[in-house]
Image (cartoon, rainbow, N blue to C red; front, side):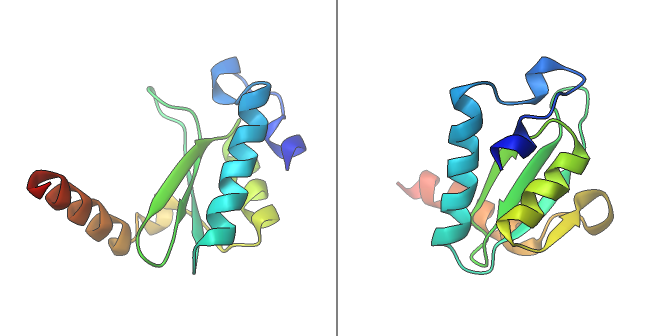
Length: 110
């Protein structure tokens, strides 16, 4: 997987560098290994952020990491052994929005 995140990118800011790359890989693997029903959503780059892979668990908990480009995002997700979708076509899962709302409400109470 390090090889996948290590591809050259049009902009050096799109790819994690050095120790960041192995940390990103470890984080994604840990997330998939410690949660149930994880799915990946590849997000295209925009003016503010590079391409990313978003992992969403059955509970709606999520994490996101930068990748050099969308193709690499799909490769990374496949190497993790999780279903992968293009967020342009599927949108974000409702369970993620519900989890975000619950987290905001909990912070207000807490």
